[in-house]
Length: 267
Image 1 (spheres, one colour):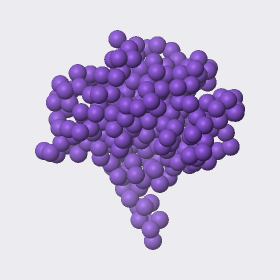
Image 2 (tube, one colour):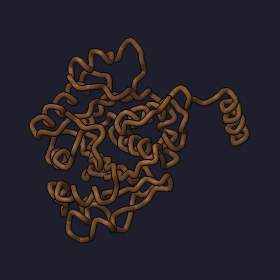
Image 3 (tube, one colour):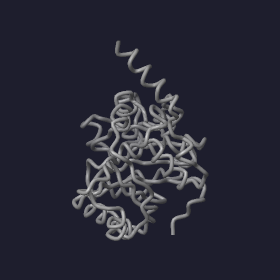
Image 4 (cartoon, one colour):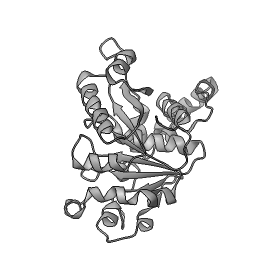
C-alpha cells in the first residue's frame, strides 16, 4: 500500500500515452506541494522530449540532467531555482546530448535526489518504452495521468499493469481536461476500469494555457483558478495537510478588481 506519510518521496508522474497533460501536472503538482511550504524538486525525466525547462522559462541551461547521466557533471551542478521557489533539474533539448544519455542510469541517483529535497516530482517519458521504464524504476510511488476518453484510459491501464510488474505502488490517477459533458467518461467508470483511486480531476481551464505563456505553474500565476485549486486539493491529499478549496475561491471583490485590471491593461 502507498504510504502517504513517509519522508523523502520520489513520485513519478507517468501516462500510457502522450498529450494527456502529464508535464503540466508534474509542474503544478510540484508547485502545489511547494504552496504548502514543502521542499520540492522537479526532475525532467522525459529525456527524449523534455518540456519542463521550456514550460518554466529555462529551455537551455549550462548543465542539465543529460550531463549528469553522461558523467559530465555532478548532480548539484544541474539544479536551478524557479522564481516560485521550486527547485528544478531540466533535461537537454539537444538530439546530440540525447544520443549520449543512458536513461537506465536514472535509478542510480535515487539517494542523491533525496538529499536535495523532501518531495521529488519526476516527469517521465510518455508511453511504455525503455525511457519511461527507467523513470518508473526510480519511483517510490507513481501517479498516472489520463483524460476521460477510452484511448487514454486504455493506455493508462497498461501503465498501471507495468507498475505492478515493477512492484511500484500507484498512488492513484489524475484525470485532466475534464469538461463535465455527456461525451466524456464518468469518474465512476474510470475508477472501475483502472481499479486505482482517483486523486483528483483537473477541469479544462484557459488559465493553464495563460500560465504556460507566463512561464509558470497555474498554481502560482492564477492561484484561485479552478485548475489551481484542483491541483492544491490533490497535493493536500498526498502530503496529508488540510486545505479548503471553497475558502480559496476568488471573492466577488477580487473578480471585479481583476477584470478592471485586465481592462486597463488592454486599453
